[in-house]
Amino acid sequence: MLNLRWVDLPGDLAALENLVARIEEHDGHPAMGERKYFHLLDSPSDSDAFPPGLVAEDDGGRMVGYLATLEEDSRLWTVEAAVSPDCRSDGHLTHLLAEAGRAVGNRGGRSVRLWAYVPELARAAERAGFVLERELYHMRVPLPLGERPQFPPEIAIRGFRDGLDEDAWLEGNNRAFAGHPENGNWAFADLERRRRRPWFSSEGLRMAWDGDDLAGFCWTKVPSSGAGEIYVIAVLPGYQGRGLGRALLLEGIRHMHERDRAPACVLYVDASNLPAVNMYRSMGFRHHHTDRSYLGQLRANGPGGG
Ligand SMILES: CC(C)(COP(=O)(O)OP(=O)(O)OC[C@H]1O[C@@H](n2cnc3c(N)ncnc32)[C@H](O)[C@@H]1OP(=O)(O)O)[C@@H](O)C(=O)NCCC(=O)NCCS
Image 1 (spheres, rainbow, N blue to C red):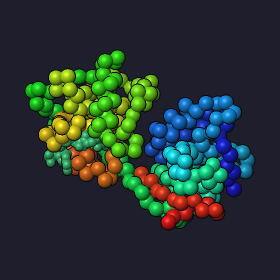
Image 2: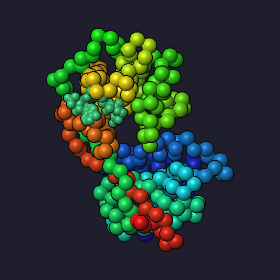
Image 3: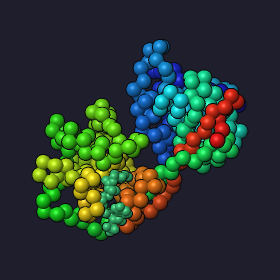
Image 4: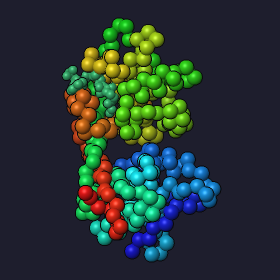
């Protein structure tokens, strides 16, 4: 039997970081999405603040799971469950989903968006009547690629200039990703939070300029070991369809491989984003796995579909 309680901060933080690291090592996949992780780290620890998630413990009081809970609007909540591999039985996961639904329902939530990173959780969501909402492909390619980036002569490439490029980058990003649930509508604080992460390097954010106008960018992320990641890539609407996306992707990959010796490149892309999926496939990226989000309506006795 697993028991759920609201997370207690900062007291639970060290054990949580430990749990998340163990799950990541086992799954070879981040245990929690970045937005939920920032939500956890940024949450104030005073007793009046609403906790950012639920902790699951076994009967012996061992922490075996964390369910991030993020209020999207007054009715819709995102729930993301990181559960220890030895606690992913049908019974455990079904119980956790029902309890999380109850906790969110008690806070006024009426529906739950659930991100499933492991197949056991996806199956539990489907059994509970959740409906598939969105698929995110994880794609990868071994490096180096044979192809070098080629830009038209009017385009200049340089790294992000701290203190100079913030506004242009934010404006460009928000135009290229208008309406996107995670990448769109970023504020200065969203950019700053990423710039404080250990993986951030200004040079790793490659920017393509047409004179004073930003034409596109490729933001790379190299963790301390392993594959490099295309974190965000975009070409501004007026510059799309002319080969700039391909050139920027090659530029980001060249940078990661030459500077950081990244042995492979990975990225996440919405399955429905055909221009991007086509671009990655045509450059040798292959599908590795799929993350899925599900939508469930809360009923009096827990979550379900319809
Ligand atoms: C995805 C994106 C970066 C592509 O940039 P781009 O400069 O338009 O792409 P390119 O002109 O270099 O085209 C490269 C390949 O992408 C694919 N592609 C580009 N536009 C496409 C479209 N409208 N439909 C289908 N495939 C398309 C093609 O495979 C193309 O190769 P081809 O020209 O040999 O057929 C751009 O559409 C964009 O910024 N979109 C918004 C932000 C975004 O979704 N970023 C990716 C997040 S993972």
